Image 1 (spheres, rainbow, N blue to C red):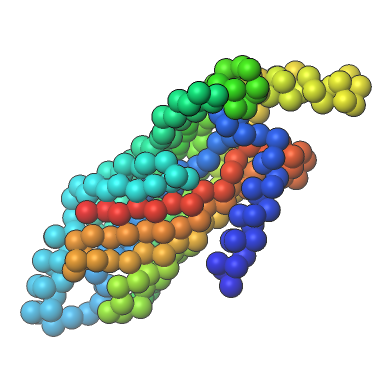
Image 2 (spheres, helix red, strand yellow):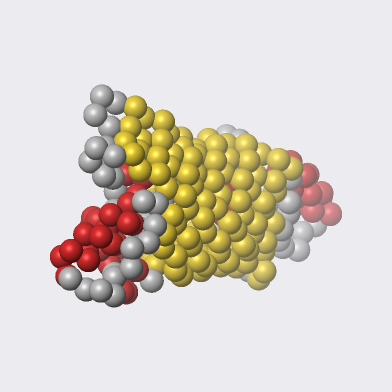
Length: 263
């Protein structure tokens, strides 16, 4: 049910962002902290030997872990520090492309923290915060015959639900981010000028930046490999902003498909 809902939203948002493209659009990279906590050893009452084995497993999973992945077809590098109850992660991604007609360069980043708040036998509810951003530039893409640059920043609080049946190597994660964003790009000046000519309205402002509130739900699946030494995550992120209410044709964010492997 959740997957069908997210696919429908993915298609809808992709069509809403039709006026923004190239460096004029932005995508929110996944918060790395949400990748690992689902696979921490279950907290339960155990015998002395079992408790010792559990402590050894926890000790093995503590510390710094690194990973690689893809976010919206862009390579994504991650570093995560994990303790028993929390995760602190940094993710950096981007792509460089220079063709004969178009060029497109982008760098994205996300810094996030997540800690368990409520714990169940096979699930937990986590709370966290994060901040991210992107820098992009294109030529002859957002605006024909012109160079376009973009600077994007966002911040958020996150609510995370992780579920993993006991003994299973597969877990399900739901994450909800609420925050705000700021995007600056000359593409917005061209859009406002075009709108002013089309409508003749004197109330349309020519501006090179936009800002607003955002809500980003994401749905993901985690699974472990090689006796838990490698963890993988596959998920959809669907940024929703106040532009979808007031000016849906100029919604600045596109949906994101993310895949990460952490070692």
